[in-house]
Length: 375
Image (cartoon, rainbow, N blue to C red; front, side):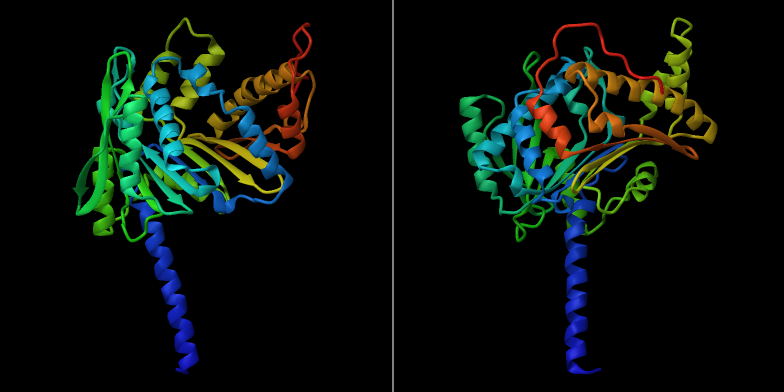
């Protein structure tokens, strides 16, 4: 083989090997038996577009608003506490949005248990893997923990430790101020020679992931999530996959059997209890194409659920937006629902014009509720 061809072949092999190692950071970071998977990859986001610039302005406008808190109430005070701690760490480490290239999070909801109607901290099993555009140093994380501990009391000072021979910093985080419940969280660079990839999560989850990384034994994503992920476009910038745990399915089955539940809701609960899962993805180019797909058990279940999606989900979202803004917008005009075999998908597109409207929006004058045209 000619020398130039050998060099070219070696370069290709080196590139493939580098990509395999890079992906290992993320495949070993998947929690076994995960039924919730989340990923955002900024490399798939169009940067220099009117949409991207307007998104930054929109984020600034809603920075102080957290709709999830209104949805979950005080059942997961851990959620709010962890967001506060994360924001504090980002501030201390001087991490900006543009510094984050990729975020991957996986959670096993099978282990979650309730104590006094709140999530039991000891039952948390999840892991976040970050890829940054700049190096992250564990000593900086320790310094940040010391500052946060002194100023806000959200976490204890960091303690150095190792897992599978890899250095890590661990600290206790107060995730329920009412009960003083804490969880020991850990931060580690799975490969200290690659200081741009960071693992963060409960200590037990981080330890297990580091052991998998060192042993080069990636986690096989559960079939329910893997099959949904295969259906998504390769250039999706954001992905959320969810497969209901058995405890949730059983709750829905019992709810469906409750004679006091309205027939429409009972049918919906029964159908959702048997679905494979839900897949959300967004592609971000000149506009943001959104898709929320419900993978049902059978084509018959999909046909039933499409009526629910059309009449309750899509119609309700349209009504809420129209009541807020007083008129239709490109986003509401683009909303639709389709069925393909056993999959029901709700789709929509967010444009730069929509963002301008949301950014400049003021509450409409008081008046009668605005209805939604019949589907």
